[in-house]
Image (tube, rainbow, N blue to C red; front, side, top):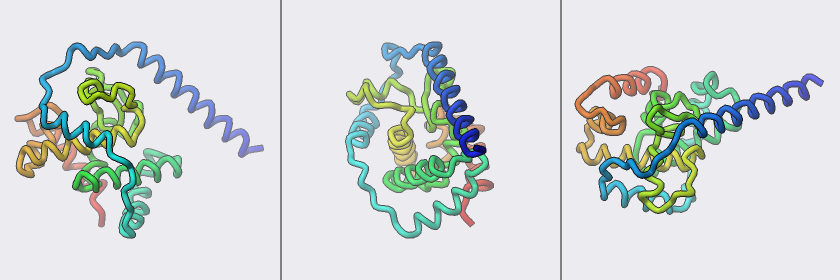
Length: 201
């Protein structure tokens, strides 16, 4: 009986989140017309990344990493199945983009605090806060930025691009990712979380 009550409570919470999400979507207009200046090279990379298959092989050390990071993320995401699915995707997409998965975890925490349905005041969406104009730019208007695999693929591709543009300078790359080039507060927040919460021991 207790299990049934917990299951219904979980279903009620899920329905409440869906209703809130739909209300937010109706209040946050998305205008593809007001597209900022688009970097053609980044556009090409995103288009290529979005069309690639998901068949990335996990290495044995990925499972060691999963166990460690799952413990660290448990308070933020109590659902073990969702937590492990998300961590596997983060590991896969970060590795694909040649990024440290722990850096991606820190960026996600700063950007959305691990809320896959997060929407910023300017309309950026999902875990890594991707602007929806990219979907139209790369010819994939039906992709769902609230789906965490899609969001991570875009976010990791963008962050890798900025790191390459800045010759590996993480401060400048993170500031570019956040749209705050020339300021250090955003990179400082990411580095703090990377070094204190997500750096593997």
